[in-house]
Image 1 (cartoon, rainbow, N blue to C red):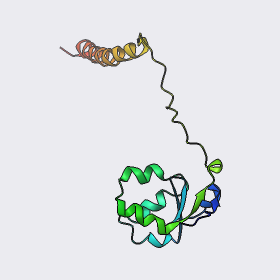
Image 2: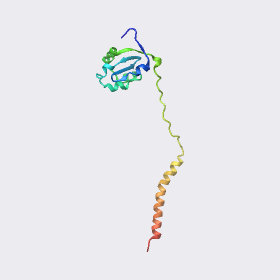
Image 3: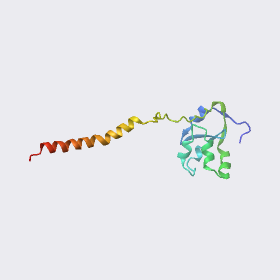
Image 4: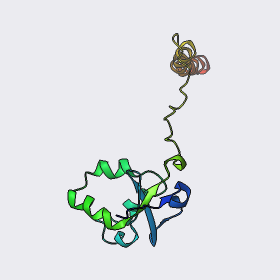
Amino acid sequence: MASDPKIHKFEDVAKHNQTKDCWLIINGKVYDVTPFMDDHPGGDEVLLSATGKDATTDFEDVGHSDSARDMMDKYYIGEIDVSTVPLKRTYIPPQQAHYNPDKTPEFVIKILQFLVPLLILGLAFVVRHYTKKD
């Protein structure tokens, strides 16, 4: 690694998100992994999916070997300016429907769904009975 690393802005690193030009941010360091795209065991899609963000979590979750970590040194091109990295988004759960404890409307609908067909059937029998010729 260089003794005086270049400081890269997040916006500049995020622009390098193609197969022929791919930079990653891992543990605050910037790596140009373009030459490694074809050789990566997980394929180039894995590396491309880690562009445009801090890929530290993605990298650590996979559980890379020590030799893979040693290999990173030859792709190191500098440090990331931490002040330019956007904050992580916090998870906002989707809005849920208001809880209705008495459930009166649903109960009425279910009763009607059962009773209306029975009333129609009963009406059909009554009409048949009175219109039937003896």
